[in-house]
Length: 174
Length: 160
Image (tube, rainbow over all chains, first blue to last red; front, side):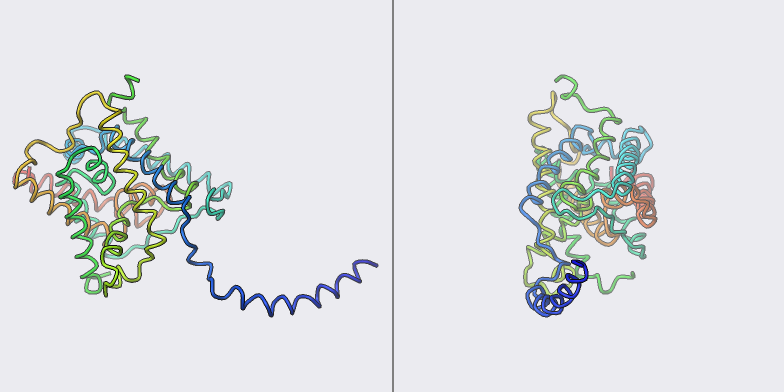
């Protein structure tokens, strides 16, 4: 008895709800959720963690990078390889158990980076820069924090490179 | 404590580097990557830019990359001042010269231009990308080494 009574009542209510809601919700599309203060703070904290790891593992030293490219020692290869392995297992677990982000509440998912000729050309140029400066973007920041003021020159170069890319982007093959 | 002050062995370092990826995803919902911070700095530094690379970039969303970069800088400071027994030699002494600074600047340009053109660096492509079985990221990593090995073995006598 009760079910037959409730059904028509919800059907009566629905059109009203639908007529009112779009007006209230429309101005805020869900695609660009603003970044919260918690996210920013947690990014800083994990940054500190990563900076300590980079420095204590000596990945930030020019000599280590040089010895990697000379095949003098396995140190860097072992760290990158182990890092990829641990990250791979972690990501498999996060996806397998459909873990949600603590902060955003959204399911964790990887956004694939696409292939284009820039991956080849840019990648090769990046590798060249990595071997000359002995640092990739993370270590550049850690070097500066560690007191290697000369690395500010590397960072300045990297920013100039970014501006160059922004300037030339439309003319570059993709 | 003594163990912490020494350089950390590769396996501890590798595990901790790898854990950064799930930590960042879990805590912030963001994918591990560092060179996007250059785009963020560029977009913030030129708010009236007509370049779509900066103009169309979501600066509010990208602010986390700057905080992450700031954290790494702070982590470098803490390690070098509190967590080490001996001073860390970041760059070789030969780089403390005008020629060295020029090399760092040119190398820096290659890093910034190359990473943004390739769509990521060692963190975004090599670690996060390969860990998520993204084929373009594996190819990017191979080209990182093509570039690095060519310069080291081909032009090394000129540069180093």
